Each structure stands twice: as C-alpha cells, then as structure tokens.
Amino acid sequence: MTARTGPVLQWVLSHSHEASARQVPSLIDRAARRLGLTGTRLYLADVQQMRLLALPQLAARRPGSAEARQADHEARPLDIDGSLAGLAYRTQRIQLSRDRTTAWLPMVDGIERIGVMRATGPVMLQRELDVGQALASLAALVVVSKSTHNDLLVVRSRSRPMTLQAELLWAFLPPRTIGTTEVTSTAVLEPAYDIGGDAFDHNFADGLLHLALLDAMGHDLAAGGTSAAGLAACRSTRRSGGSLTEIADTIERTLHEWIPDRLMTGILAHLDTDRGEFTWINCGHPPPLLIRDGHVVPAALERPAELPFGLGVRDQGPPRQHRARLQPRDRVLLYSDGVTEARSALGELFGEERLADTVIRSMAAGTPAPEALRRLVQELLTHQDQRLHDDATILLAEWHPSV
Image (cartoon, helix red, strand yellow):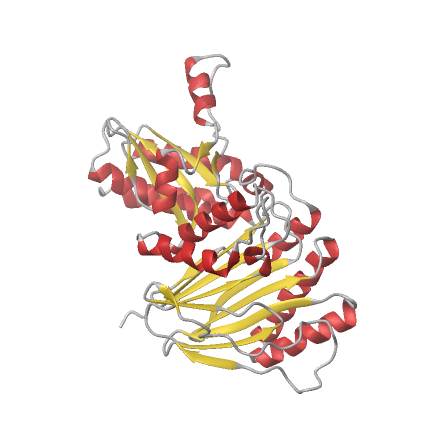
C-alpha cells in the first residue's frame, strides 16, 4: 500500500457516516479509483449462501450505452459454487482472473463472511491487491453497520420474500459465525426463508462462549414467537449474571406464563475458552456430538436429558448441568432433529452418522468451519429433494487455544 492509502480510507470513513446504503458502493468505487484501481463492485451473499447478489451502484450512464450494458451484466447474481467470486467467498482467499485484471476479495466482518468485492485494474499486482483488500474490509464494516437500519442491504441479501415467522426469528439471530483466537462458533439454519421454530445463539462474555440451540414445536408464527421468547429469556438472564440453570428456569417460566401449550427442546451451554471446560443442560434435545481427531467420540456427551421446556413441571428439582473437559482442536456439534430425521424420497433418514461424516470430511480437507456447514446444508437439501419438511439447525463450536 502507498502513503495515499491511509488518507483515502479515512476519507471513506468520514463520508460513510451520512452516506445512504445506496451510496456506499459508489463511495468505495471512488476511493478505489483514487488509489489507482479502475473500479469496484460489491456483492452480498444471500441468506442461503447460494448466490452473490450485487448491490446497486449509482453512476451516470446513458441508457442503452455500452457502459450501461456492462453494468447490467455485472449486476447479475453469481453462483457461489460455480464462479471465481464464489471461490473467494468459499475459501475466504483472494482470487485473480487469468489476465490479472480482476480480483475477487472476501468481505468479512470479524470472521463472518458477508460477500465479496470485485476490483479491477490495468494489472492487479501485490500493491493493488493490498489496496483492494483494505477497501473490501472497510466496505464490509460499513455495510454491516448500516444493515441494521437500511432495508436495501437486507433485501439485497435475499433471493425471495420471507415468511412472517422467518422474519421474526432472523431479527433475533446473531451473526452466523463468531470467533476469537481461542474458539470459533458457526451455525446454519434452514429453510432460511421459511424457518418455523428453530433458533440458535452464541455470544462471548468473561472468558466464556455461550451457546444455545432451541427447537419449538410447530412451524408457524407461534413457534417462531416461542423460540424468540426463549432467546430473549436466555439473553436477559445471561446478561444479568445468571447461570445456565437460571437461564433454563427463566425460559420455563416465560413459556408457562406467556405461551402455554407450546413445547420447546433445547441445549444451553457454555465453553470456558481458557480451560476448555464444556458445561451444558439438555432439555429434551438430541445430545451434542464431540468430534476429536477426525472422529466422533462415541457417547462422549450423552447424558440423561431433562424434560422439554413448556411443561411447567420440575418435580426433580432444577435441571442438571453436565461437564466435560475438551482437548485442543475438539469440536462440539449441536443440531436439531430436523437434520438427522430428514428423509429422502425413498424414506432413508439423513442420520447422525452422515451428519458427522460430512462435517469431518469437509474440515479434514482444510475447509473452514462456516463452509463445511454450508456444504452440509446443501447435502441435506439434496437428500430431501430441496424441500425440508422440518427446520434444520446446526451449530459447530471449535476450541483452538492459542497456547
């Protein structure tokens, strides 16, 4: 990068505060041209992570001109599994065209993939790639900061409308991937546009990674509301210093008082990121899987489950907490029964073995965890002929201490 890069990035930041979402792509493009590139284009991954969708870019072009036709061509969706742009997204690595005039650069918020930026120049050497990556990183931060209150950015990450219950749940969900030098947590959720009662949460606080996976009975707005209320109860209690047991009790009371006659299974957990101690409560949910050295450790995290949330009875006292000590590079896999119980047209279950094997094979090949889960969902959709009959949610946490 050159001495001009810093001032130009500062210029982008200062102008981004009052820029509308529609102005952001052009703001990044103007900055790129100041730094010697010939242009940029921003693409966001859709909710299902199947396609990359271009953000509209303001420019003065005469309708029907060659420039206008080129702009229309660039605005077409790109297949994540069949394009150089998609390869940059999948691998989180810069990809270059053969003539080195075009680079596709990952747009990442923390470690959450949000899309890619296309950058062009007379020739993309290391200096141009460094400039492009700095701009792509800045563009990601600006886009994420505005996506909470600008529907353009939300709409441009969707291929079709969402159901009401899916809209409700996505509003409550955190980023799909979070991480530090000690731990990474990533999740996927399908059917993304028609999710009913599944939800997940992950969050960091005081050396702990908090995890939750909830599965409410039904596939309607009431199911979505039940899971949303469960997430709110979880966060409210956690942020007030409550333990896992207190979180479980709050969820139980909330459902019993406000949403009677609705049941919900779930796993509440936290991982001590310093010591690797995994603590969890299982309320009627499939047990977590422990993946170590490329294999599932049989029954490692199987414990007697508590009753599901919503029954309003705890005759045996507060729900039991279970503990297990992880080893460095261990992975804990949480999932809803919509994954393992997905049936093919011939009635074959997807099953726990295929679930674990798909994740293990992907990560053994060096695939990042978010991409491994994306591929798993694709295999699940293929297994059920692209139409899931139940919600399917998967959360994968990996402990990788730095020392």
